[in-house]
Length: 192
Image (cartoon, rainbow, N blue to C red; front, side):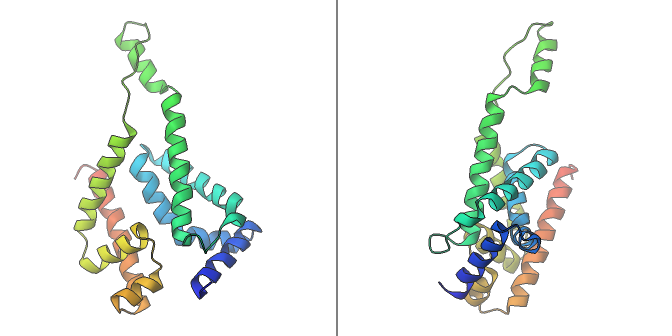
C-alpha cells in the first residue's frame, strides 16, 4: 500500500471503531460529493439531506470492509452512495406518491386514477446536463479539479501532481469551484 492507501485504510478503521473525529474527517472529505450526487437524483432538499445522512451511516456500518487495494476511497464512497440512491429510488417507485394519489383522486372526482410514472433516469440525465452546464461556467482550473476529484476519483495530491501545481492552489480551486456551483444552483433554483 502506498501512503494515501494506508492513510485511507487507517481512516476507515477509525470510522469502523466509531471514532468521532474520523467520521467528521470522512464527512469533510466526501460530504459535498455525496450531497451533489443525491441532489442530481432526488427532488427535495429534505430527501437529499436524509439520503446523505443515510449514506454516511451506511459508510460507518461498512467501514471495516473497505479495502484500499481494490478501490480508492472516493470510488468506494461513491459506489456506496450510488447503491443507496438506487435503492432509495426503487423504494420510491414501489411506494405510491401520496400527493400524486390525492391529486389524481381530486381530478377523477374522488375515484383513484393511476398516477403518471416519473422517470428517475430522465431526471438524473437532466441533473447531469445541468451540472455539466454549470461546470462549463467555472474557470478552467476549478472545473478541472472538480472533474478529476469527483468524477475520476483522484485525490487532491494526485491532482496537484498531475497539474504540476501546489496542493494549496488545488485545494483553493476546489473550494472556490464548489462554492460557485452552490451559488449557480441557488441562482437557478430561484428561477434566475
